[in-house]
Length: 180
Image (cartoon, rainbow, N blue to C red; front, side, top):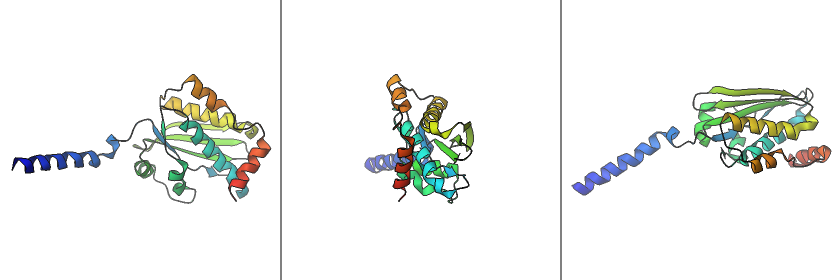
């Protein structure tokens, strides 16, 4: 009888862990959802995807953050209805980044949302020439890390601020080729 009681207690205790998913989701966890291309030209979608990728890559370089892979969030690409709370629970994060790019207007808009409460923590509209896109992406990643109070080492800051290339034409062609 005692063995049965211990077994029931252990089963009840382990089930309790799974009944509260918020308890296992780290506060400094984040998913960068696919950005929306709000440019008039649908051909700019490749550039929008590249902005999202680089922000995610920069956040993934910060050891104090848990960044969810691009593969896990691509199911939420434009056109699919998104509920931030459901997305957060589905991918196991406390925070979600949403954004949009309007290439002709040189505008990148970004929002950091607490997925547990569906409230905005930070919103930024960056109106800078997109030939400075790598610096824009690095600034966004650093701002998000700051909002989450993630520790950013000097080495991580240097890596994030290092552009993947200095040739924007080549980078543009690379992003287009990835879409083929």
